[in-house]
Every structure is written in C-alpha cells, then in structure tokens.
Image (cartoon, rainbow, N blue to C red; front, side, top):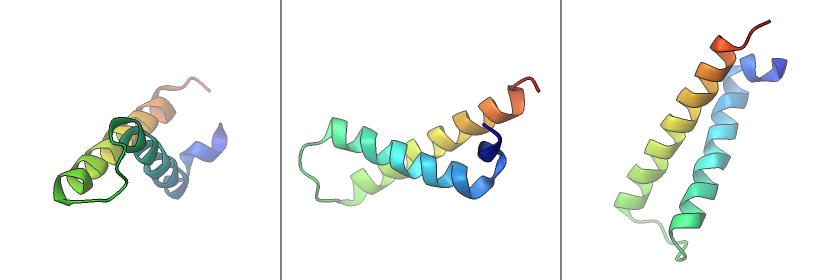
Length: 59
C-alpha cells in the first residue's frame, strides 16, 4: 500500500468513499447545501482515516 503515501491518491479515495456513503444515505442524487456539507465532512473523515492508517502502519 505504498501508493497511499501520495496525498492525491488519498484525496481521490476519500472522494469516492464519501460518494458511496452519500449514495447509501440518500436515494435522491440531487445535491443541496446540507448534502454538500455532509459530503465534505465524509471526505474529511475518510482522508483523516487513511492518513492515520498510513502513518501508523508498520514498515
């Protein structure tokens, strides 16, 4: 999992993880302001989790 050390890859993965979470929570795909904020929150959480995983993984 050496590719997770690249910041752009973590941002991309967190974007897709947030999209999957939003798709599971809401059946209407139209975005309004609360959904955008929730999407950004999920992206931040996924990015933070991936960063913790990368930094704590034993080499």
